[in-house]
Image 1 (cartoon, one colour):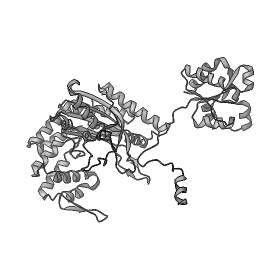
Image 2 (image 1 turned 180 degrees about the vertical axis):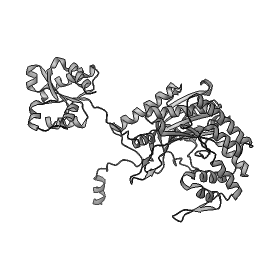
Image 3 (image 1 turned 60 degrees about the horizontal axis):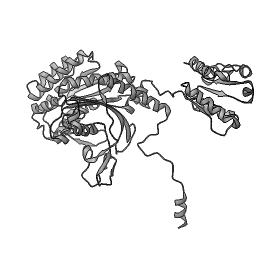
Length: 495
């Protein structure tokens, strides 16, 4: 009994929930800068910002919900006081579909929307896989034109470049779900047989990793991996497999050449011809927008998300070479994806509403930029006014207010430590300089400004400590009345 009381008396252990991050100023400033760059690009292309709530009614989300009494697999859910289940949004597209269906009659059509915000996934976290993360999306709802897809593709590239990805460091891989459906018809696979389609899609998706031999096994009887695990295949015959592999080999150096190669493989198929016509219009629009094949290419082997998408699909590969912790070259993978999803709004309106969109995962993009050497830089902190005499603290607050009125971030040190600890505090706050007013300065009507950035640079070449202390090259005494002007001048000198 006493042991139970002792346990109850123990304080809780401070611990962060798995899959959630505490984000400090350097990373936070970096992510805000990236989000701002992306959203500014979306706005320049005419996409209207829209912010929806963090929670949606669970039946409006639909995608991850299981068949049980508590819909919290895949999403985080709670029950409202009217017994309706609500869930944290798992992406920014499902809330858009609900919003469009709810406000359809009053919206301009097409409706061009952009959004940035956190999303939540109730899934097992892992390396680079979080339960909360930010996305930046842009969507066109109400246009079935392939040119709408092309515009989204071109804008996605422009947004990545604005965020810091080099023009030579990414390529948008573009395909169309109808290509695969046409191919399956050509080889005699029922496109409505979902399980067979998924096995074939997953096999094609492993082409980069397993090569044609491994994919051939997965399209046939199956494959045993090096660990001994066996994956059942699609049980296609050799002729069917050859046709599918020929399809995956149609990518060429230019979009036009890829279309020509595709037309040979599936050009006689109705669905295949529809896809080729749509891709030809996308090619023409991308060309008019100045998007080269090196930044947006047609790659029929792209199958990601084809169960969700209804037409054109695209994902952006990060091309710069990256290495793992052991120094081995690794493929970074996707930093953005999207496509056409004409069936999503239909859940609410019982009629097909064409839509296409693109999504950038901010954490993923930041990881790519870090691989490129763009590490987060801590933003400059505020000017710190040291508190050396508690009887005159009102004077220190007056200085801080004068600096803020002059457009300078400033704060008064409010701890209880001496000058040495206060200087250490200013350093940890990344303060560019400190303002010192002790009794000597007060009697003379002056203040001392200590330039911490200049001092750090000079300290790297210091040879004589005694000379440094005597000359104090990084600080100056100025008139108290010139506080704002002198601080501004010192800040400007460090830019």
